[in-house]
Length: 393
Length: 205
Image (cartoon, rainbow over all chains, first blue to last red; front, side, top):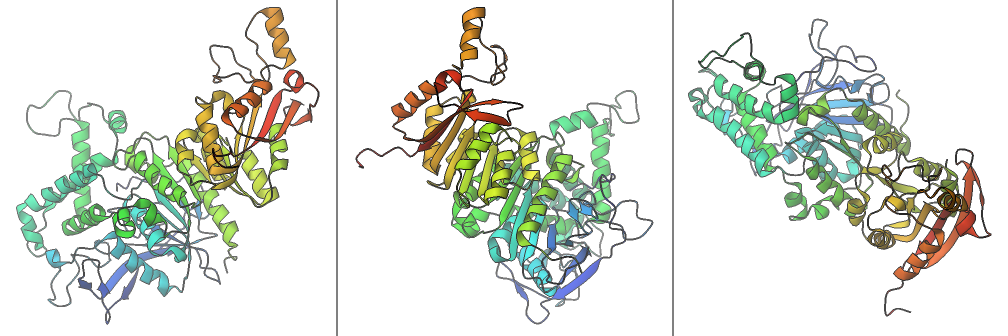
């Protein structure tokens, strides 16, 4: 997802946070959905707030496709930007770190400190590259479960996340129904549409068409930066909306008063996409992008848990749900959220749903939005009362 | 809380499962949750109102009542409430049947169109009546139906739906207080409130 969180709306910052690492499976590797084994596995994570004495106030926040464990606060005083959901996570904020213990981990397959294709393969001493096993959303969640176990947390008060993070939320609620009190899937889906897979495939092809990709073995020879930048540009378009692009750029020209009649970035939107693409290259690994988009494309809750029936899949769940969609999200449109809500209702699950009017497209869940803040804080307060969680020690 | 909602609240058994159609910001659900420990769900089409209800900690689905009610299994609720929304319902027959499919009992309240003041207005001014209960002109009203209490009874008979309980009320003072009308309700009541039971299936006794 894009990271344009500059504004802090309510509450205070959690202040300084630290990237921590949890490693498991050195002796007993994680058996992946594909049947392949992965171990040892490291997860990069961050925590904010304090775990209470009876370990009942933990909220797991799941990041989106290219996000990371840095959810709120700053790594040091000179950081220009806080974590990706600083708007929501902090003292007095909707996910109130005065009350809740927040855990956010980077997913496996990623490149922000968790084991992924850029990590060293212990068998060869070289980066995995394309020999890294294909991971699924289920595999990511099973790794997160090991992290949650390491805190001695039996049941999470809530699992929250948007987009691919929302897929992890849904997976948690169905895979580990007795370990989740509440689930908040935002701007997400139970399975990718053909359109969503199509965009991901174009993005992957952009990377694989870059000669520097070298079948995933590029860590010593130079990275496929151009392919990755194009992949990001494609992705970025799907996170916005027609209206938000018209509002932000329309057909305005960039640093010029007339057309160049060459292939420079004439239009502001071109320049913006190039900038986003180039910025992304500095922080992300192309192979991780391939693996993570594939994991999102493979996600299919009804097939995996319900033999093709979403109602059957949600019959495993027992938590309370808050489902949120956004009017202008054309990557995961509202009808997909309504489909999951329908299946939850058919199982008599306790579910709330709101389609928030927002012009900014899929990325709306990352932007300041009073409605979303109110929904989250109200819903979490109710869960908190219901579970009668103890005071923070 | 509105007086008609207060009356409805007295009809609800503690601990029951309640679906409130068109729940607005959830004041009835919040009251019932607090006072009667019900397990409640609301459906509300307006984002602002639905958002406020969810933010209160209530379980509410933002959506259209026709579409949303379809998804519930038979007898998922003890009571399904439709308070002051029947005037805006396009197909009351379908909706009432759905209410009594997903709920054991249905509760419906609506402004009584044939209240004497409405009758007098029509008689003396010759114009479409406007009242506190139906405060719209013909060209801007969201209400597509006018419902006299007598006609609603006939409608229930037509559907084969038994009326379990019925109260006619007259309200004033910001609608929070009112009294029950027993004498000529179709003339003197501003609102009718009905509790409906499930229709007998043909062939069953």
